[in-house]
Image 1 (tube, rainbow, N blue to C red):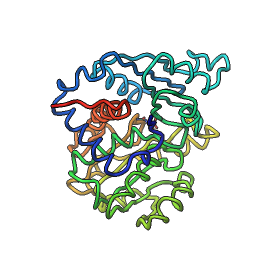
Image 2: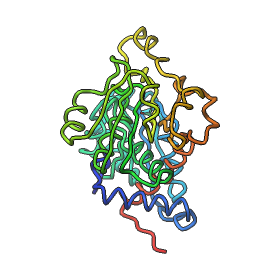
Image 3: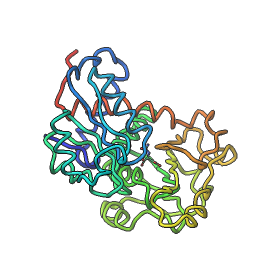
Image 4: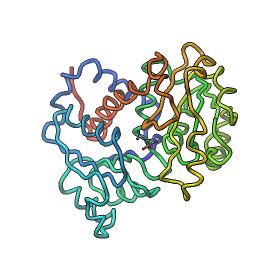
Length: 307
Ligand code: NCD
């Protein structure tokens, strides 16, 4: 049995196969419409979510399966003090696969250790968010045609942004990847990722504070929201929250074929006037999230669909 805790749980070859499967699902949805008939997905969300929870559910429904779950800790027995370990043992009796989001780093690994069904990490605190990374990789590969030879700007809350942490880990395995880390001093990428992932793999990167400086060099600009819920005090959040605002004027500094991605939700960091720019692909990205999660569910449940 396999879980998905980090993007490194799949080899580069396995990831390629998964993304190929997602592209085939996009082209031939009818072929997959009953692939999970009789199967159930549980979504166990101890933290707010729109895209991640609903796209997992849409994915299972598109595959002909069904869904059950809870969307806040308060509506589950966590509110009565139940442990993640006991919850997952119980859910293992009700469902065939589960996607779980929790505010505590490592909690989804605790779940996996006590589970008899595959567990998908749908975000564990400020640590990892591997299904968002699968979504990002599918978006980049589908719209740019490659995952290698890219200069990627990561902008915003690089400290708490789990989507950034997972995306970096996944991308360093491809050839000729460079990063430009754009953040205020207080929200720099954690040093364990700079040292253990970037330096250890000899990945070229630079750190800048001004977005304008980075824009002309980028193939991809990955914007992120300042992660309000991970701040220790409101004052720091208020000071940081509007540090970056991507607008039309800044988009003029960028390449004609640079893509703007954002895991969403957006707060103020991308002005709505950018939405009409053909380079803004964050809503397409949300759609790719369904195809890739369909591919993931099939892969973890070991279901193959013949032509
Ligand atoms: C992200 C998350 O939850 O980490 N959202 C998502 O899953 N699409 C990013 C965020 O909340 O800012």
